[in-house]
Image 1 (tube, helix red, strand yellow):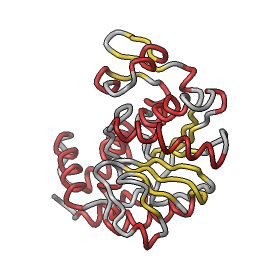
Image 2 (tube, rainbow, N blue to C red):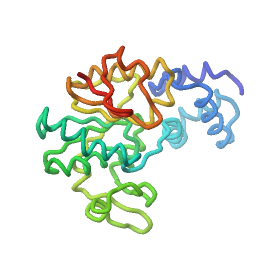
Image 3 (cartoon, one colour):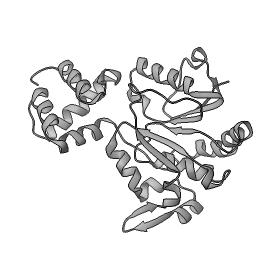
Length: 258
């Protein structure tokens, strides 16, 4: 294609603040080339021009590269461990006012799952989840709260009955749950991190990052978590140098800040 990928990365960083150098290049370049071809555009230079002048193409690009695959209660055994072990420990250490951040929250499945799971331990009106994502399009979808049946496969039956209403082939989550989540745009590689979280949940996102970018994010999470708090990562991820950063491994997917 006309112009090279290095030029394209610099333009995207300038336009969006997204540093494509932090993503595994082979995977990301293949995704972007596919997207450009679908639009029938020739060359990175012409695609950059389209991104600058066409809001629809720009939004499509942001949504596509931020790789949004999500579902409620993904990997249910890990959520069961949260219910039986992590939440009781957090409540015994910090009380019922817990600061929890769902990072790279995608379409809201994860933060809404956290609200429901935590409601078995704490009254709903005391729950507040801070949820962020790079992509304003998926945040908008999350705020609507409409999901297909496949996304709800892991939701416990009592929660599905209590908090979801069928609308045609889709299911709408109740305002009672939605009101407990605060959504914001946030770039994990660029924006500052808030402090004093009791738990951070960031799952199945960093697998697309380079090793250097992963390390940077895991270190920033460590600084953001209070002593005695936890980081919950995805089933396809691991923190190879967790001891060096300062984490203690609680189990395969939960890391504690001693």
